[in-house]
Length: 186
Image 1 (cartoon, rainbow, N blue to C red):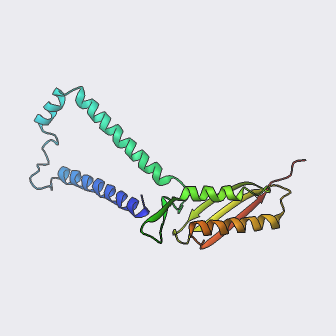
Image 2: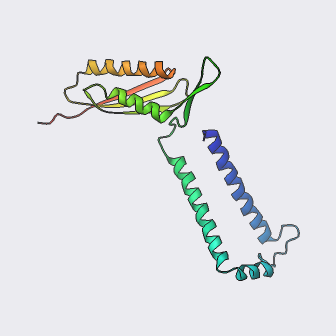
């Protein structure tokens, strides 16, 4: 789901909760037209139906509550996943002929990280893509061995980024490379 879709979803949820709270407040204050503030919230007939359906009514309420809690937990976990601004979803480019090419951004980041670790001096690599798909920001962290030649690694990173730009048709708007050298073992 896109960022706009998430904002719309959270706005709808917030408006429903505010409307429900405002309705309950106006009913309790007696300002709701046709509602008596001294009247009970649930009618005797509704309470009687609830009691006749016991224990199934209680079970149904518990299951509905558990489903709402699970849906809320999954929605919140999805919102909190990944670094802020991480490019999620698919990268889509129009083709020369009718149709589009769609690639998962996680796959692209993993492919660039694998390409970077092809150099013997690079022990680990981590890649994060942020920003707009045609010109994403590329954040790279490479962990180098103590004996890695920095000039060779620098050229390897440049070549990997050039290959990434050529294969994805995305020229990075910003490239940030952090290199950490591991301490040599005695």
